[in-house]
Length: 410
Ligand SMILES: Cc1cc2nc3c(=O)[nH]c(=O)nc-3n(C[C@H](O)[C@H](O)[C@H](O)COP(=O)(O)O)c2cc1C
Image (cartoon, rainbow, N blue to C red; front, side, top):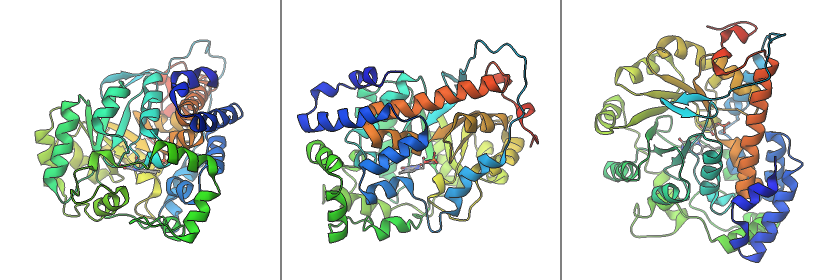
């Protein structure tokens, strides 16, 4: 791998000198990042605490956040030996279209607070690895700009806002810009209680306090990049609150405006209106999965929002087997939450997931070093995935089956 070549791909040379310096410094540290956890540590070193905690944290006691990871640790693989694994093929299909890895990028909001242009950086890295990228409603790059600047497989994730017409307008923009799939996130009727954000004075509406000003000042590299890159804005929501253009005010207003009355009938109406692939994200129960299949969703994501919503909710890997058993033959079952290793991907696919989505893995990468960092995260996962498949005595994704699990759950 070459982080240097990744840096060139990003057009580092066109940035202001201070940002270029910060980018070079950050990129150099990438050569010592061998795992997603290494990227997490680099992100932690570069970001103010409040920003790092926003990306890293979960809700309340963070029990679900931890359990998403722990669930992967509870599953063990039983490798086969003496198989010719000199060639390994990680290609699969996701939503019926080829993907080079059984991995897609999960939608994440506010990425620009971690790295200016962070959404585009992750989307370009995804395109380079031949995998789908999902843009969030609360992303810091517009639907159209992502389509222009990161031409790969694009999905758009919609939050349902009380102003339903506004949500419909976003969905129409995604259709017009050629996004191949729409994700409706259903585990956020109201916002989760993320106490790290409160303690760090990161709660919206954002306000400068002695605590967070000191915090920001402690990370001059990050502060410089914000000064040169400009304060990130939730570009898709620019018209949401016409009376203000202030990003924090918009964020706060959006946060208060998730529609808690959104229900199965409303999802069915979206299904009827959206002509392309529809993915419902945030299901952890087999009966809900049955309903999603019943109204014609093409795929679902077994997800608990990376432990950021209901704390005490089930780990996604534990929730997967009954959902696969209920609907796996009728729709694609994807999974996210806690994927940090190639072996995690193998475990999820062995248990019946068609693919996994990753949120924090590429976020840590982009927060550590921009596009080369996102690239490095995917390189690490891709390398680990191939290696794990080979070490399991498998040659391709079709060989990754319940047969590889110590105690098959299906
Ligand atoms: C900082 C952050 C922002 C997120 N924003 C969104 C979002 O805007 N929409 C959404 O559907 N999910 C959002 N998620 C949840 C992710 O899509 C995904 O479910 C989760 O990150 C998966 O867990 P992982 O981070 O352990 O991979 C966010 C997650 C994080 C960490």
